[in-house]
Length: 104
Image 1 (cartoon, one colour):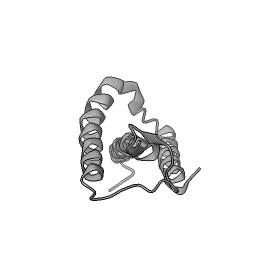
Image 2 (cartoon, rainbow, N blue to C red):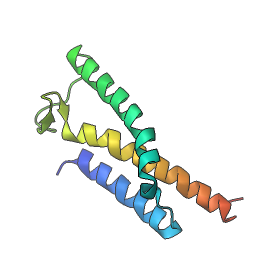
Image 3 (cartoon, rainbow, N blue to C red):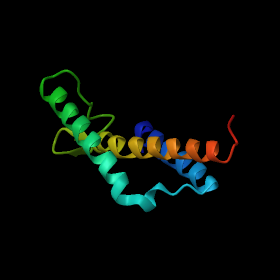
Image 4 (tube, rainbow, N blue to C red):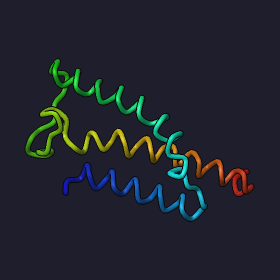
């Protein structure tokens, strides 16, 4: 497993561990979660594809060999799923901390 994927998994595990400790369960609101994540993920995935096609950037085969649609590494697609999830999870954790009065 490469560093990119390890970073994504670590982000997800840490975010979820804090959420579980606080009792925050955003995955129970699946429809709302998907409605907030899908449009942004699609937009940025399309942006990635356009940038690759135009030659603005690329992903080297030696570091990220498994591709989806021949262009995007699996890790890049996972990035646009995992990081928005972690962001929403973290936001909800801070809301819970503030609700409990644990944060001034």
